[in-house]
Image 1 (cartoon, rainbow, N blue to C red):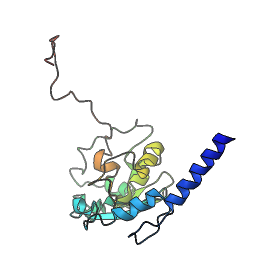
Image 2: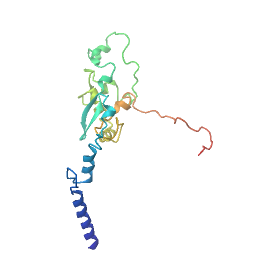
Image 3: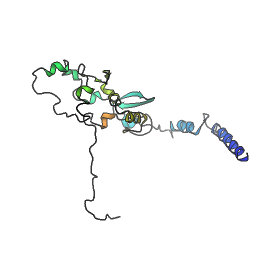
Image 4: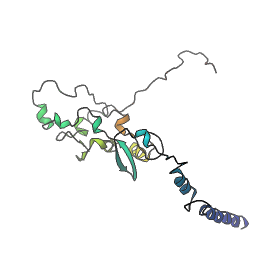
Length: 208
């Protein structure tokens, strides 16, 4: 009983201290995290922000799995967008026309086997300005990660939560994250194995 009484007393003391309004403070902080967040907004008259690291990048705000953050705008990085500048007809009509050398001849799909995936799995043959889901719903090129998330659900959840992928700038808000296609080639997403820049090919004891 004595031990429980001491623990109860300490718990009450912590609550009182955490809610105590310190002399000179303008606000009452109910927890240490509240105080840290409040103090961090304008630390020594310098705003703590990642904005300067990515202010030169055109970005979009998205909300996924309850998290709101910024991603790079994608369509202005695609050399031949809008696709309908060339794909003026449905794909099956263009394929039957004698128009000389075909476009995209150098793209080799190495994402899944031929029985699982082809170009039309992701690209909308009736409107090439959009991608499409497996249920034929349009997906904007700026949100191509929605296409990836259909199969790569774990990676998508980790990415939305901030545990997968690369941040632009730092961990201070506003959060800006690269998307799947900023790191992975969508037609060949697997990263090749790499040797270290320097490696010991002989059984030679390295100098400590």
